[in-house]
Image (cartoon, rainbow, N blue to C red; front, side):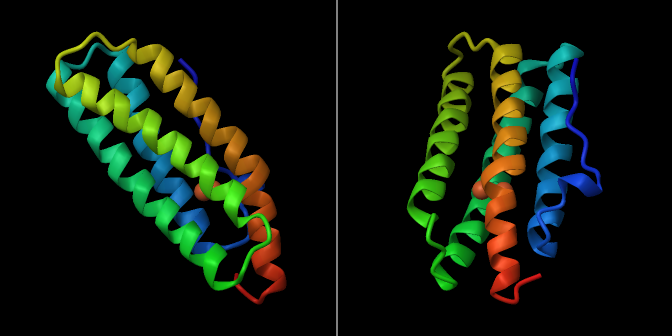
Length: 135
Ligand SMILES: [Fe+2]
Ligand SMILES: [Fe+2]
């Protein structure tokens, strides 16, 4: 099982975003560990709900900063956020309805999504925010 790790190279240069990314990584790792360890469905459901809530909260923060500082890449970045929220919400809904969910595939996808997103567009956003005096 692969876990995500936060280190200083992961920093996007904006404190609040780094702190939230750390919590997201912890939450996602807890879910991966739970799924690999065969946690009961109700506990997995709870972890997915927590991940969904925190992901939304984090995206709200980034979306707010992008709007406030009129970030040029705002629209595309927001769209990426929306797509992931839909994916997690869909998994949460399916779990709630008792539909079969391939949990390892799902957690693997989210993990990959976060690492690509954080290393890519979040880094670009962070650098741009730095030029606006946000650290
Ligand atoms: Fe982002
Ligand atoms: Fe982010």
